[in-house]
Length: 119
Length: 198
Ligand SMILES: Nc1nc2c(ncn2[C@@H]2O[C@H](COP(=O)(O)OP(=O)(O)O)[C@@H](O)[C@H]2O)c(=O)[nH]1
Ligand SMILES: [Mg+2]
Image (tube, rainbow over all chains, first blue to last red; front, side, top):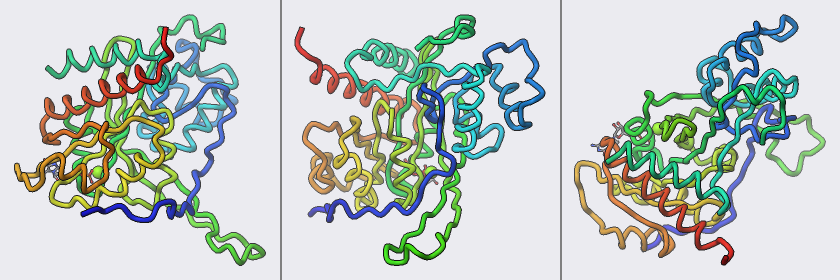
């Protein structure tokens, strides 16, 4: 018995709204972001939504958390964060994809962490 | 990575991602919730439906926006490293969203409801076909039912021989933790196999 069907028949009529990012750093849903200088007030020239992001990211959190906490769609959060990073107002942290052997050390740390947490 | 002056003040924190896939009602959200240190969060992505008809390119593009919800959870694995778990949107027509979630993920878990194997087929097929990230299969035995053996499931879903398949209970934190550890070990073993000698 097999459920395997014809492959390659997936239709993708949908695209992400506003998925552009100008930043050279990858800005994925799991990527951590921090306000570069948390002691500063948000610049008055920023849009209200960007000011809220600036304030929220005084404590490091992921793009997905910014989206969920401020109730703005993921694609919009990505664009606004990318613009803030471009202005030097937000720092984009490294994202570990683990897909190259050079990142094995970090994956091993993750595994040790899980072993400690889930015994 | 450090390319800006201001970044030197910020303690280096990094993150990784694991994708939790599977059919509708398989236990994805339950798994995310049972291993996460925060209650599972739901966020939304707005998708724009592009024009589908190939033969009326002259017509004004008809656009409809759809909101896709997905859940995620978080585990602080050590002081500098946070692991996020993202559940894929249930409806398979949102494959675009899957691509976006799968990109940059350490690996994926396909949660299978053992009573409805056919529901998992599309998720398994997705990872078998694109092979970009390591994945494992986690059999959620609802109410302890054991209708198929692991190897019967492997055969039915055409899961590659090297892909780990394990039993678990999505409601149980420790059992969910075992699933995550299995995925990490497997991802490390596939990297080791790919590493150049020396
Ligand atoms: N009895 C039992 N119920 C479960 C188990 N895992 C999930 N459920 C229930 O099954 C339903 C669907 O699970 P959910 O995690 O929402 O599925 P999802 O659609 O894959 O996110 C929920 O009502 C869960 O409480 C399980 O291992 N045993
Ligand atoms: Mg769900």
